[in-house]
Image 1 (tube, one colour):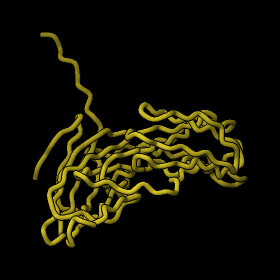
Image 2 (spheres, rainbow, N blue to C red):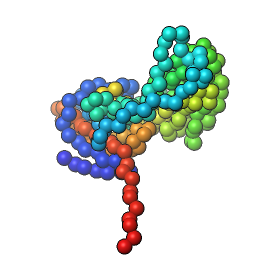
Image 3 (spheres, rainbow, N blue to C red):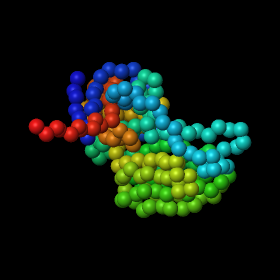
Image 4 (spheres, rainbow, N blue to C red):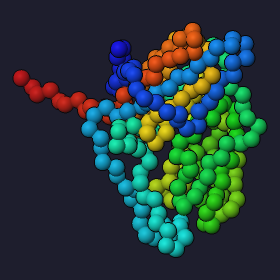
Length: 256
């Protein structure tokens, strides 16, 4: 078992039972040969599972967000950990020399529903379009915090949408200035393949040729980590487990 540390976060490879994640990419086998395999795994929390914290939302702020009688979701999606320690919304990316995914003509959709962004985290290849939908009856404000791409600060009225193209790789935070608890992340990647963990922390990256792979993991609250995986000549592979935890605060040394 190998252990590495990146930005204070430990990562380990071990056997686990893994299922498919969400929003995965698939690398076309094309000229890679006939044999391909999958990298499967699970991202788990290292340490005592923190208690989920609700968002701070006042009654006045939430007016019109939900139909009468519908309870608003006040869960903070910044760190979702299931009972088994699986971490949701972690992004796993792999870069393969001379291999890149196709950019779809159709825009990826980021919806605003019941005053929440859906999905909370999305992964798109460089050059993709994002359509910001507004399924609510009230207005929202799309405010993107980008460094390499053009920023956007636009009001989107109920039932309408706005569109934006991302030409450079970076992680972009999206907020609503009208409803300050609303936030989302768009991971614009130049990687060859990727996956996003599901609610149980599991993921799958399909269609990879045999070989050794290095991958990167990003999470909005826990930061970054790295890991490795191997697909054997026959296409089989061992699932990997990646542990991520909050950085430990360094205590001050007492003077002697």
